[in-house]
Length: 594
Image 1 (spheres, one colour):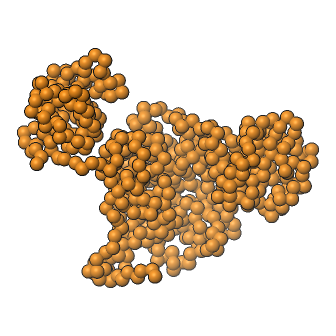
Image 2 (image 1 turned 30 degrees about the horizontal axis):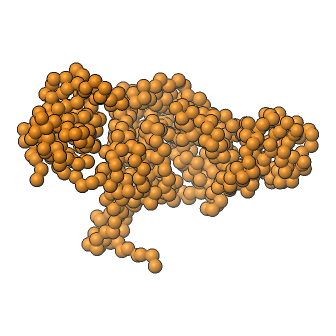
Image 3 (image 1 turned 90 degrees about the horizontal axis):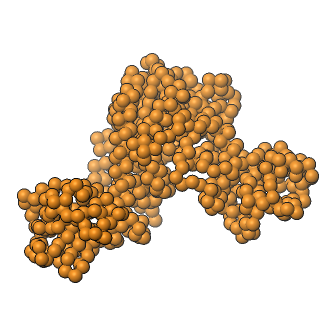
């Protein structure tokens, strides 16, 4: 049997009491973190979400409470009443905020017993993540996860306060909507009322927030749940949260400036950190040229150098042939890494191969000259040009990739990040922001043999590129912008198309026939005809932003009840099979794979 709460009412949380409370009569409630029996006197670390307080059961002072305390075990839920005392000299715990005091218990109530937990409720515990997710309600008791979710709350509160103060309205948009192509698979919801028809869960509120601008709401925001049925990894979930916002009568700098203010407010409120504004800006082309990726980490150097022009006519046929076929050759100078072993270089080659690089050429710069299988193929003039371009010095290891631009950039861009981690070049306490702007409007999908929107089809192209939409789509740049923090994209947006004729031209460039886009986007095109203002916006990846603020490497550690990489909830065993009657109501039949 357990005790009833009765008239006992909590007076303080477990992290509230300090030396100023000495001699106060208090009531605390929480979970037993650990129990220690020191020669008759029993010490309990009592824990709630705010912290820990040491409570003491002394047999000479309160024998009844002490006798009852013998039954206490880890994770029992208890309430205690007692008096606050100063800890004896030499017993103060400087690592605990309540470390100067303890509570001598006069009354103990065991509110609920607990089975032995599947793992220790401590941050340092090493336990398989699937076990943690299966027992997530227990895992969430760990101090770091509790701190993460409290930070998440603080970020959301700061965002709402900042946007409210800047004239934004929090407006909800539908969760059950129609399927539209936005880059990933939709989650579909069958309709019972309209048999054979389906809703889609929104990948984002993109069209609805544009419609709100056309409805004259001027400034909208929402901290909103979004859904994408895509392959998962550490920073992806099938359901995730965005800070979504849209504004009328704005240009790129208006959106970016307001977004910087929002991020600065979040960092000030949660970390006490003052960010330097404005953030750095890089065009997409510059980011790709210097870093190989459109989400560059600027906390370290190791910039890439394009050497295609130097090696185009060289005797090294591999480089020369790639350039002749329209590819590029780039170099990465690993300063001071001349002593890397051949095995270590082979490991780097294998890493580059993950990103489809066919090989990784290298040169070691030693006092007696270049050491490399490819050194003999370059003339003295080419060696001098390479030395100057790559800034080669004695002690350097230079790595080369030659391939089509996409492969070369991706392989060396990721290798750059990998090397920086391996060489300890990254200051983990630094936060480096950069805006990447002027993205290409389209990319060509070799599988589907058609153009696709690099962001989404409602992004406005640069005005000076309108005349290329039909003649040279890959030369069209857009008014899109991404905010990158330490190599992670935390937000992205654009100025939108606000004229029907331009929107139709973009949809046609994507290979859509008029009947097709009228069926999918007719409501948007009609709205554009109704008097649409120029507008633009941005969406922050809320989970990813909180992850970086908390110093975590997985967004699962900042989401209360996340899914696994197989999109499953191990706590509730979802997804699960539906009953026969439910399927019949929806006119559905499940066909299982053989």
